[in-house]
Image (cartoon, rainbow, N blue to C red):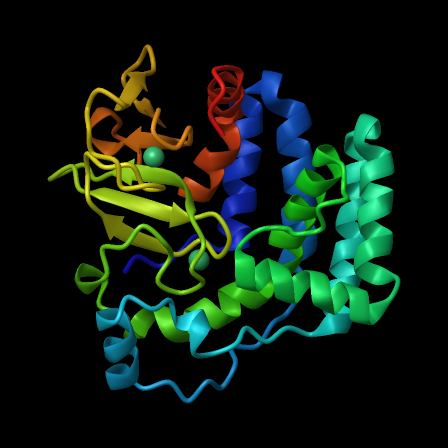
Length: 277
Ligand SMILES: [Zn+2]
Ligand SMILES: [Zn+2]
């Protein structure tokens, strides 16, 4: 599988993108500060004692590896990073400051409560806490993704080299079991590579099928093309989900996918306006 972009490469790409897309300054500046903060956390690759055969067996059983080897994270480094991200978020998005404040106290106040939230998030792939306002839940999800990112990357760096990508072909990430939030059509054969929303692992999936519900009916699973043909917005009327896709056959640049998911925020807005999630 491909080596993921490091945070330092992503920061350099963000800077170039900001010069080219001044209209995205608010979003890009927020992300640059958050990614700058998380890039300073040093997470050591854990000693999982995973061997290739055991990984191959789990891949055969279609089991994401996180079901076998737990993610390890340093609670103090996590809490410090979550605090920083909440401060950055509240500063850049003042209308969301109350949500960032609430999330800061959820993740850094009572350590047992924080542990419960993170464990539930790792298990379910999403934030529980039904009493939270939708806005705060989205902020919590944003803060969790970024505060756990250094630990996820260290964890994935141990397991990814052991996985045979062509044996997986599932809709969920082989490492952490989460869903993709971006995809790329390869320049040569047009194979579909999907990017994990949580741990940035890249894996191969079937084309012509919804990555969320496996719907392959072309009357209810379709895509919209961008004016320059470089981007596709896949939408599914069976599960009402969408996926942003970049077509590598339509661009000469080798894209940084973790940057692309940020600069295509306009596609998220149009998809949500149409009622997709
Ligand atoms: Zn993942
Ligand atoms: Zn679907």
